[in-house]
Length: 550
Ligand SMILES: [Zn+2]
Image (cartoon, rainbow, N blue to C red; front, side):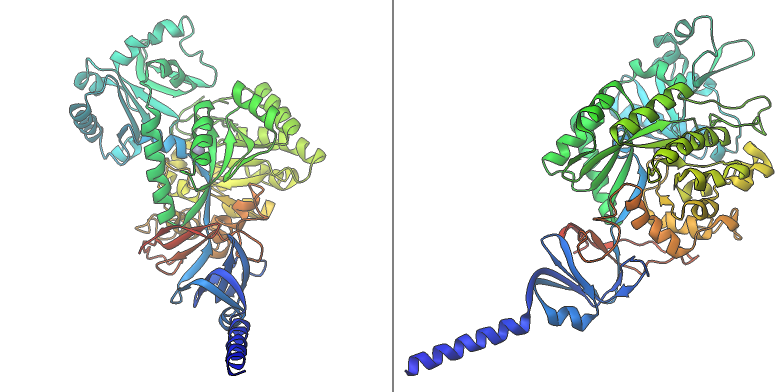
């Protein structure tokens, strides 16, 4: 009897205890400033997480009383956000670029040559391949020629791409081994969607713009898959450090798709990847066979169309000639009939068409295609990537065609030094016009286009809201009327990016039922004009901690 009563006492105590503890979950993050990004942009104190999903988010006492967790994180009043999503990025391109000579930030032609020399001495490659030079940092508007490059590198082929990736400088040796002039034949300027820049005497300057770079592909050394994989994992780590848990990969070739599939399947890539396929023969077969495709954290349901080139290399297709190059309009890098064909394939496979459009002519052409699509499917969510220079008259077409603008605020800041020179004052009114575009669709998806720009999302916030460099140049902001508010910017990096990739049911907000893909930041997240670097304290994907400062 005595034994029984003590047993029932213990049972009673156990029951009491567990009733007090409540429902069991895996993790509770509390004492936080949780920016839910829900409809009202509510801020809450605590969130309960189980099996990778958000069970409940709410006031501190409510969550702590209702649930008992295996792990508690006291966030010490830090900002918590849904994991950031970079809506336009090149993970594969960045990984490949990391194996090349880094030329970004070279302050002169001479500095660029020095970097190339150092790399050559250290690695003794058979071909020197580099990326990232920008002549506007050397005080030059015109694209450079290869004279100094030839003097310094007479015997080794050199291929170095401009910062925007849309043009390259090659030396004489490279021109010889690639048999460039023979490839061109009688039509020196006859590259569809590209240009071999020539001197007055008809000899090449060494500059190849857009599709003309393709004449060199056969001469470039192959990069080992192992090396690319290693670099991809390094980049993934850097993304987690900045609180980026997902990217929209803006262009996947055949090799790239194979690599992504492999690394997602074996669990190496934990990042959410929304893939846009380049419309290659293999990729089109893939889409026809698989339709909308999901493999763990990899989703494939869009095609990336490269409509034109870049403004910096004057490859963007304009309605009227460039202000600093009479008679030159730029060009479409994909012919119109081909774009229409891809649009049909997108419609047939249920894929989204995401078109790179920089010039006002390209933007208009694509907006008209999207408008036809809108008649058949009002929720197509087809995107214009960059939407950089739009004729003010055409801006309403974004609304009429329900075209989703996918823009990169840091581009505005990088281009401000020379944008007016290229297109003149009048056309600037519809350039980098993020606020006007937002007003059309009600959303913008924000990205960095890394490695074209730094992958740091805090630079995006600074650029979008303050519209100037980290040193606050210009102080009044570049085309400041087109600035986004801080709240708009944060939505563009979270829930609007999720919507732009059909992932809004599981990502982009901290709400019941969504995936616990969230970040605790070290410093307050803000758009303070005095830029302060920020990093993730802890980064979670589906409830799993993928990075922590500790
Ligand atoms: Zn891009």
